[in-house]
Length: 152
Length: 175
View (cartoon, helix red, strand yellow):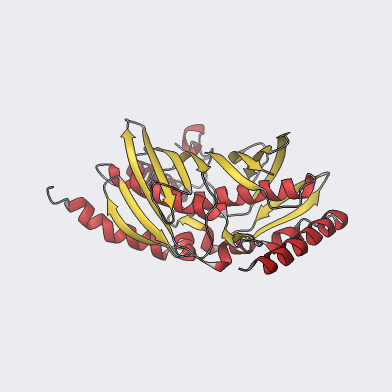
């Protein structure tokens, strides 16, 4: 990809981020990222916070005998949610760079919709710490929690 | 090294299960090496897995999936009787940004096995193995999958035969 093309893409991206914030439409940010379409991640503004969800689809199954959602999909989904949370709610227009990602699996991810929400724990000048939680039936019984650091 | 009959039987089944089913098939990686407690895989670059639309780098979630698969596979095969191992946790450090249009190589190894937990680490690299793009540590539970399967099947049968019988507290326990 040449430099000029990349500058143009960056301008487009920044424009899209501004529009998404104004229209309260986090889904339009997800639509810009091909990986989110691959796993089927969606987002909306729900009661002062962002709610992300992942509808069940056959290509996300990790263990066909249960069936259970692939652990990597849950991880990728939470990482994606955390990045969108930063872009949408903090004053960041570039794509945040992930530095580390720590994921605890608490329960098996059954073959149904996964919900997630994120919380920015600390924002420094360079680093942001975000925690993300995923659940299926009940927010009180999470299936996974993640912490990640992003460079902004 | 002596010929390992179990691995000879498990290897093709596992390769098929991981490469042709569910998320593994969707990602499209190939398992290059499958030994007891060691897994190598190759992932070609794919445009529909991009996470940064400006630079074209694959999303971190792809690397999570690849390392989780490789570590999980190593943990499964390291046991005397290979069986399913649920992931307890996974920690991933991104050392450098991945480059677009280049394949990603992943290697995972079990480095310790205790009576209940399997400790595994993995690396992902592109050009140089000494300069990896990501490093991960993952821990897995050892479960006696056979007894769980038999138990749940037996319970299901029992409920079917005696629908009036309410499941007791013990029955509804998952583990």
